[in-house]
Image (cartoon, rainbow over all chains, first blue to last red; front, side, top):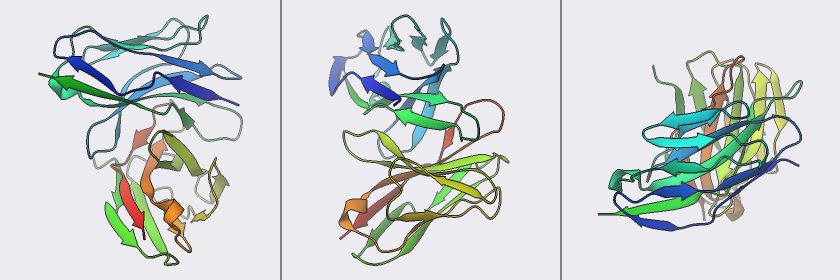
Length: 115
Length: 112
């Protein structure tokens, strides 16, 4: 079945450090790929997405490129801030006949940024 | 624009009690779904709906019922709560065209 594998956390970085959170996927079709962020005590917010191979999603300084050849969608940010501390989820969505746009999630990566 | 609204935000139940988690969206989305979030497991799909009057099971449907009598509302019912249902529950919706899924703020449920 479809699955998403994320880099295990927790990840602790100093402010202004470079961030990479690895994400790889397995899917039977051509998925759309997403990164969601969950701040403490809040729900999930869409951070960025990419819908086809070689697309780059970007938002708030975060970037991720849809790599079909390596089935990856790694999240990167050049300089993290304390306010980026959150749990990050990689997810994929496949659309098949008669089904909803459901998300398959990775297990989440806890990021803590220290001042 | 309220987006996806879930109530209640926090709830404590005793084993065997029943309750309904409410979910409403004001974006006229066709697709709605319920997920549960457990530590180290990401979010898992419980039930989903592709439109009013149509529902189907997700990955972990046991112990939960849903209905979709209107486009706006998608309540999740726990008929007889069990401690294994202690979790954070998220309702989500998405439009018929395009593939961005919007989440509610979550409902923290504890079953004792």
